[in-house]
Image (cartoon, rainbow, N blue to C red; front, side, top):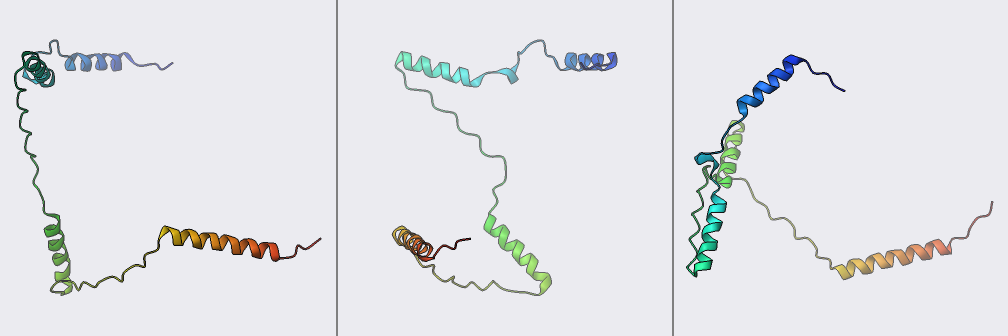
Length: 126
């Protein structure tokens, strides 16, 4: 059992009393979802067209062009080194394509040759 001092209990009770709200009235406690759902139900019962969905709020943040930001960052890093211009871009060599069938055949062939080698070795007696 944990013992708590009277001061801590009184402090906790004061905090609870301070944060407690007697009524849940006011514009911050309106259930918009239930109100909209009730309107949709009324419209369906009465055979009316459904109410239009409210417009989604535009994002408040700023949209950043990542490529422009990356290019600016690279140019900023190159300036102190005395490098100018764009980077040289080289084509990467094409990878050889292997199909699943070829890979399966290679795996099966490897297992067979390993099995043959193991079987061909004479066992030593102690």
